[in-house]
Image 1 (cartoon, helix red, strand yellow):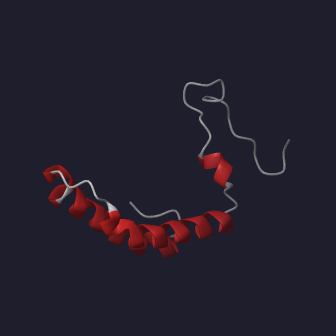
Image 2: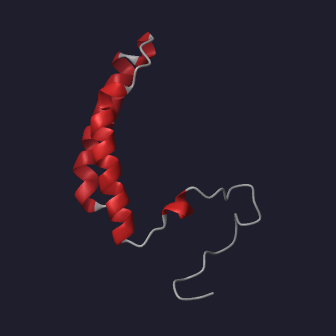
Image 3: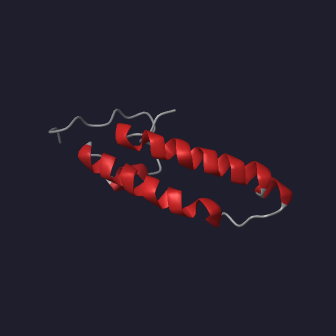
Length: 82
């Protein structure tokens, strides 16, 4: 799956590879120190934040609980409407 920003897709693949390797080779063997991928994750995260800003996606929108609430089946308002 590609990243939200085309320019972030390669970083996402690198992070995914790192995470999958850490998970299978370390985590499942009892080593829960996930710092091995922290550097690439931080770079990828910054790229995603930049892409979100460019696409006018508000950070608060991604933290909103919707499932199981009255908003679950509401259609989001279109830009410029109230």
